[in-house]
Image 1 (cartoon, rainbow, N blue to C red):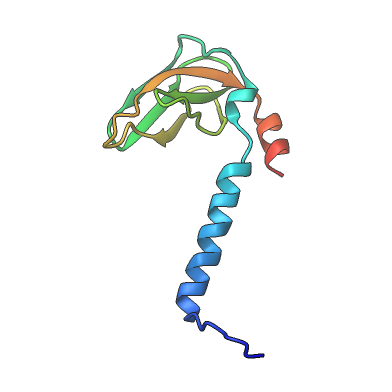
Image 2: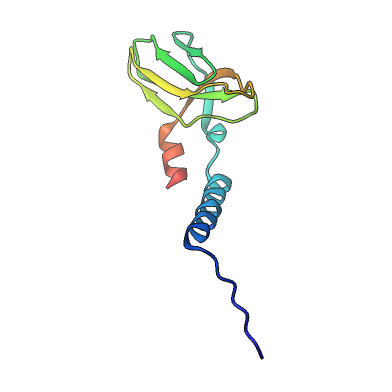
Length: 114
C-alpha cells in the first residue's frame, strides 16, 4: 500500500494556519451589540472620515461608548474620561458610515472576550 504525502512549503502552511486562526477568532468574537445600552449623551460627539471616526467626550463625567455602523457592526467598547478622545474605524471605501454612538459596559465586553 503506497502512502502519498503532499509537501507544503513552510510559508504556505503558516499562512493557512494563520488564516484559519483569524477566521476562528472572527467567528467566535463576542458581539459588542449585545452589551450596548442607550444612545450616548449629546455631549459625546463624533467626527468621521473615510479612514477614522474620532469620538470626543465633552461631558463632565466619564462615559463608555461604542460606535454602530451602517452594516450593523459595532466597535469595541471604549472608556472616555471627560474631555477625552478615542479613534475608531472610519467609513472606508465601502461607505460603512456611523449611524450613532451608544453607551456600553466595557466589563461585559472584556469578560466575554477572555
